[in-house]
Length: 197
Image (cartoon, rainbow, N blue to C red; front, side, top):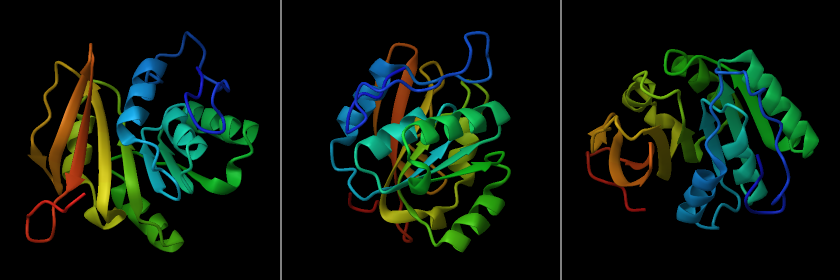
């Protein structure tokens, strides 16, 4: 699996063994399409990568100019692969890795982020398909983790439809790539109105 853009373009990531059913990386083609949508303005952004898997999305963001990425996953296999990938590309100083169960451990994540004084410009939510985790994470997502003009990308199987408004979010757009759909949400303001992005 390769990085598709930025200063690490063409570099290969460590990935789980082919026998592993625990981690499902976002295919390179779709990852490239995602970053084409996000554009090249990731310079200086703070990124939260939930259900981070191999860390491919967050590392791609770092390659394309993000300032710092917080990786979160429950799997010890994922945590070790992310650590190896960060070490390979000498990105350890631009990242934190936390082993947490999302959305249940959002309070713990909130506490950790307060300690580091971090809020995010961009969030990736890429849980296992068809387990209700995408919707549950959106519903329980603490809006205090977001900057006012944040963007949240959610990946889910195309047969699962996510709502136009959920939790603190409003759907901005969605893109379908075969069995995968990417949803792009923006935060609602305190008055329930959409923040300009």
